[in-house]
Length: 467
Image (cartoon, helix red, strand yellow):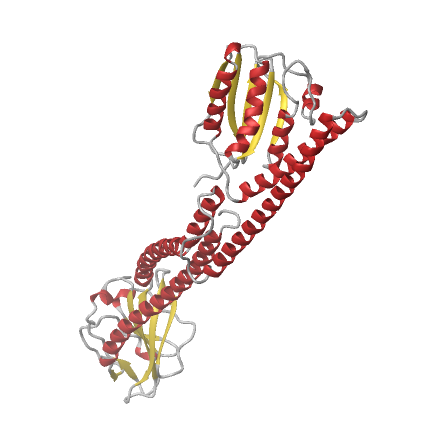
């Protein structure tokens, strides 16, 4: 289960409740079926008991009859008035006559057995207690072969005798257990299929119910990519207020940022005019402090350009800036190859054309252009531009086979206006500007020695999420 996944949480909760309900239902149905099968067995035995009772008659002790199904008990054991149970004709169930068939009946007093079914053979049914009530009683006891018996018993008294008789009919529980096992097997299969079907339906229901959240996430990615300025889809009433609040927040922030950007631009332009006048005045006069004043004016210009660029970058990030590093690098290489045609430098670009970064195209040109131009200036014959994905960032590598720099020189050259070779044209701001702009985009620029022998610049920039 995904951590903090709303869909999995709901699926787990619904599935858990479904499993509990199905288990309770299965247990209840199983108990119901067990009681039902037991009641059916008792009803069947009750019919045999009624048939046996209908044939129960007494005769004076000592008289003999034929068609017996079991030997008569000794007459000396009966008490006066001396009566004996007449022989019982065969019942309609033939298994009462088959030895140890599992179907048995027995007629007894509180002290002795008077008659029993032929299926008991030489055995007798022994009970721990006899029912004192005249109604039906049923219980489970051990049979002659050691198997459990379901016994239905009734206490009776015939008009001709003062003696109470207990008539019992029994059947082995194996048929009940077999039927119950079959029911349990069918119930288990049925409930398992039901649980599977319910889980599939719950999953489909959750997928359909949470589809607006997937649409919301897709639209949010489009806003982040700059394809949309706000949410446009119609959402259910539960999340529609949230979407409207986010739209209002996006509009408010965009308005504030545009106003701040305009104010920064106005201030920069307002300061540029006095600075230009001061620069022109210094060019016409030769005061002793001219070098110092020119240096301060240059720093003021750089600060204005820096903060103006920072405000523009922030606005672009909010509005979802993006560009293709491959396309931008190809354009830069095409331009520099014409500018530095006399150097005969070979450039290799090897990375995925489909990759995009969350950087404005002009800012990317400013960063990558400075790095590529620096490589053109110092390369002997070869420049390799590659890229790889590191976490959520694209790390672009620009390596050349020039003289390279030491680790200390790599740190020094990233400082504002620092140069290691005054013979090469430039103001020494290119690498520093690239590093500053990379930091504004939550990226990083690092310099180290390349495997080609020269300088290797690693520019890490955030990837733009793809839909």
